[in-house]
Image 1 (cartoon, one colour):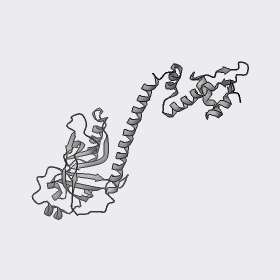
Image 2 (cartoon, rainbow, N blue to C red):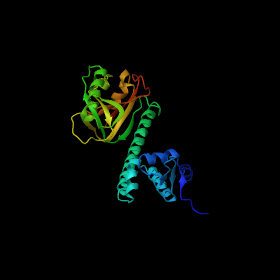
Image 3 (cartoon, rainbow, N blue to C red):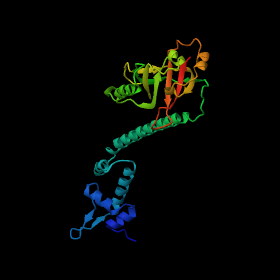
Image 4 (cartoon, rainbow, N blue to C red):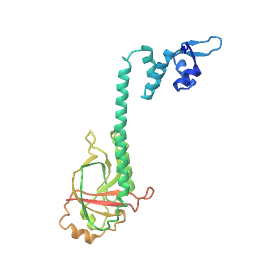
Amino acid sequence: MAMKEYYSIGETAKLLGVSTQTLRYYDRKNILKPIYTNEQTGYRYYSYTQFHVIDRIKYMQGLGLSLEEIGPIIHEGTIDHLLPLLSARKEALLDQINQTVEQIKDIDWYINYFTFSGQGDKGSDYYRVHLPERYVLEVPCDPDEPLSDMEIRLAEKKGSPLCSDLTFRRQYGYRVHMEDLVQQKFRPSSYFILIKSMPDFVSRDIRVIPEGDFVCFRTPILRECWNVDRLTTYFTGLSHRDTILALEFEDNLVDWSDAMYEVQIMI
């Protein structure tokens, strides 16, 4: 059977699995024009030799190249323009993969954050954990000031141009002193939020919490109801400890007044 010289736009679309609207768009954008257009009817016709060009356009679109990028490649008919675009597309995809991996890590962290409060109420029990180096954005506190003032000042720091590129973990905490804990008083010396990784700039508001072993207990610290007798017995002679943190673990997305805190005392 002899090969046809021309194929209508409908035949071409059906053979190559594209829509007629797509072929018309290629024509309108000067990416690929039909080999022949009947001036009287306006009907478009394509040749067999154009089929592989249409197929190549589809393939390159599948790789993520835009029609604006594909047009010059088709017109040039060489790989000189194609290869740099493919390399750039590869780098973009690798960057997307890295971003996705990091986002998955952030999701896992947040799942663990909310799972923490459901891992059994340790109550007044003490336990020991080894924690990695951590980084925080921190503001000093007047022990007698309202918590709302601390929140506002930390929010201002977070929103400053210096911190605009930082990635924060959604966990807040306080630095506290042993002498306040043994008096069953919540009087924080500073308020902070965790940062995902160490910033590449120096600021007095960025602090490092060193890696180390911590003895911990859980309490809704805002209610000032922990067991003081147990605390003083367990930590006799440790009032000089410098790194004592209270890390918040919310279990309610609206009301955090009864949120559980993990008090971490570095040993």
